[in-house]
Length: 99
Image (cartoon, rainbow, N blue to C red; front, side, top):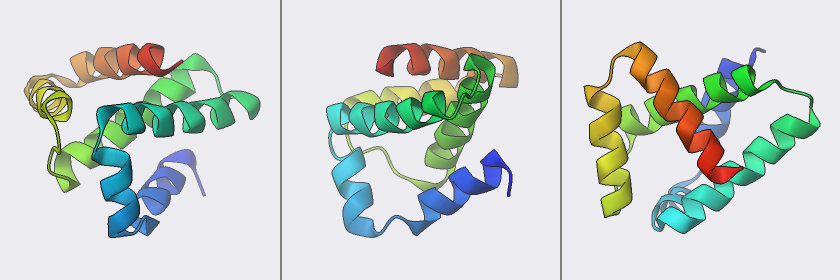
C-alpha cells in the first residue's frame, strides 16, 4: 500500500467523534498533524514526501469535511482557490507550521 492509500485509509477509519475532536479546534488539528509528521520523520520520509502527504490530507479535508472554525474556513477557501502548484506551497507552509 502506498502512502496515499495509507493516508486515505486512516482518514476514512476515524470515527465521527475522533474527527470532531481533531477538527473542532485548530490547535488540536495542528497537534494531530504534528504527531503524524513526527512519525513520518522517524520513518525517514523526506520533506518532499511529507509535503505530498500533507497535500493529500488537505485535499481530503477540503473535499470531505466541513470547516469547524475560522482557521479551517480560511484554509479551505485558500485550498479550493489555489492551483495544484499553489496547493503544494500551502501544504509546505502548513507542514512548517506544525514542525
